[in-house]
Length: 625
Image (cartoon, rainbow, N blue to C red):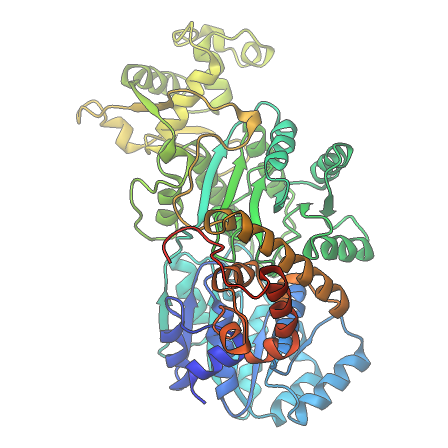
């Protein structure tokens, strides 16, 4: 059996996606690899296929209990013997799993990094034939990553205690150049094949909206996407609870998830979401890592996250099946204050020196600044994200709100020069709110307290409103003419580039939307250009068949006590509607249908198709035959 046989037999796919085959070939030749692939690109296939071809066991190190459960469940359904070992199991269950593993019962074992240093697991590992060790979410090993976990440092020590060094493979979805280098160095990868397939998720539509009433926006958006599953991320538990109550009052089937709920509540709410009992999940960032739900059609950020790494990882939970999905960030200036408060109260790592703690703080502030600029840029949002991760993107993607909006350009160079003059006059000692208020001639107590009325710059931009002045200041920040200090005071400072601005005859051009979309009616004016929804593929009869297949899948999921998407993904059901298989040979050509899944479920789906069609093949999709 070769890699193609394994791919088809167990996973039901006839070909590899971009990057998968190269990484698999590297692993099978005995080389270490590092794969940096966006969420939904099929990272798990890259280590699961070699694991089934290697003679021994593959250990997969993962911090994500929910993902372990999903992956093991999916593998077992595909006919692969797999197990997981983490804190969700009792000690007796762990001992039993290790006994079965030692007896050769499992080809793939998922394990939490904290388990690596326990005597029982180490004893098992020293005596086992371990062909490969896979590090999932590998960015967690870097102190400069957005989600550093000290427990990941135990992986290196664990590898050193094994009698024979296995092949090491590492995977992550989000890594800047610095984090990538850190993974290779800290993990001790030996001349690894490093593959970056690109960070672009072409099926995702990106938008930044600034609605006056976020709750109304969310309620209207869900009303327009009533049959779809989505996640709404909030910065705080308080926001989660408040939005949850409002959605429930509107009759929306929503669930919530945050660390303030009991373990039982979190588990039940997560299951309600996964099983589509409650298709809308409102959560803090405590939810979602490792959720392998393939049919999430939208991710809304009610508040701005603290970094683009966090944002892209959370937004990436949409559209894992390759279909169209929307990632919408609802921005307000208050979000910056909330995030700065959260950073000020962030629990510090006790192992850091004072210098390291300060460096981490500065790094966090810089990330927050770049995240804020994303919300302000009038240019392509996709290009901004790709550039942040060190990848070149097109200036026009055609699948983000900024690319689809009409903008007008206004030369605001003269106003920008007055703003610079004001900042110099006050000796660069204040933040955006004070400077904008001072220039607009505002008469608030804080400005009187600071003595702003005595400066020549006071009121020189009347009758402009503060919000208009802030727009120009934000544009100057994005263009590198100004910067804000990386501390809680966020003081405006002038860059060297601004000092020679007049010498270079540099202009400041402000791009403003020609006509602001109505914020309360969902993401306006968009036509996503990549990815597909089933309504783009299937005609009315096809959509009826899809619903019948989905109902059958739900019934089987309840019988088997597992999430519907582990039975078959939506993408597989759509392909059934396109191909209209009537027998086993035809069903095995459907993407995502492997031999084991056909043996378990195939006949029931064939019966459903035969009953719906009356045994007469017809066309259920748009387009040519």
